[in-house]
Image 1 (cartoon, rainbow, N blue to C red):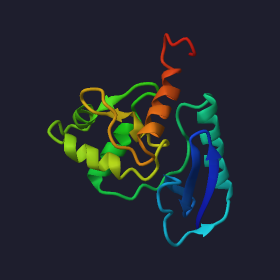
Image 2 (cartoon, rainbow, N blue to C red; image 1 turned 30 degrees about the vertical axis):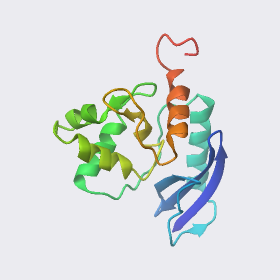
Image 3 (tube, rainbow, N blue to C red; image 1 turned 120 degrees about the horizontal axis):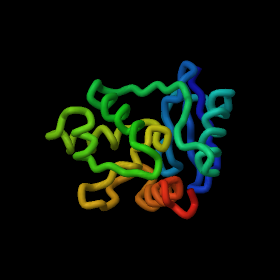
Length: 161
């Protein structure tokens, strides 16, 4: 079973795709949807949309969904490391490279980050340049900034926490 559906969120429409009962892609309206998927809702897609709604409402910081992340072993290590970055915090590409035990692999981390198939759920938006600058994001830098600002409210000491 390969289904996808589009849902509306504060940052616009987001497509969510599932294959064999696991979320395999989350993509923005500016990205092409994957080929070979039926456009229909399913209980799993609705659960993913519900968790994203909770995230945008500020009541969910992490996701609990079955994921199917197709990639290399290196990409899988990077994506796993991204899930350990707490909401409201950021890390540089170098920081992530150190986290996975490959401190000279900052550029490769950037490429793996770029290939993350499930944006927001695996929080690649939390990775920034070593100088604190925003770097590329599939949804665009304005969406990346929105997500980071949204999550900053959860940091200890924030007036919104």
